View 1: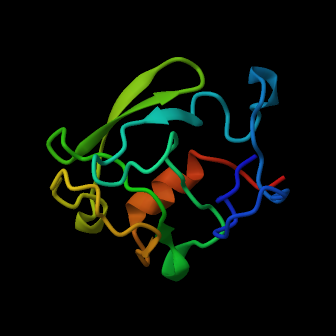
View 2 (view 1 turned 180 degrees about the horizontal axis):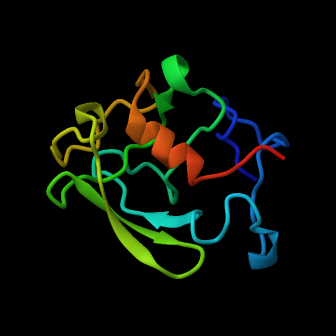
Length: 126
């Protein structure tokens, strides 16, 4: 249901698209919609990597951190079946792994191009 796409937790979220079936994927297209992404080991707190899409630019936040242990990059799979390695460009996106599980989540990351990249590949407004 995309509870965190608005930036606040709400199971009644209706602003952002969610995709229950493959034929629901229109925007972004299947080649541009990520399905799975490695999560930073200290960010794991549930079964999903949350990305909020409502707050962009100066208001951008990182809810759950993507992994960066592949030389500052992450493995990503997309709805069309292809996979890529995405190299992060902003140091705020790739904090070192401490393996303590005590990382601060839902943190401000203004004008972070990596957050913008994730948002564009997570959902679109209805």
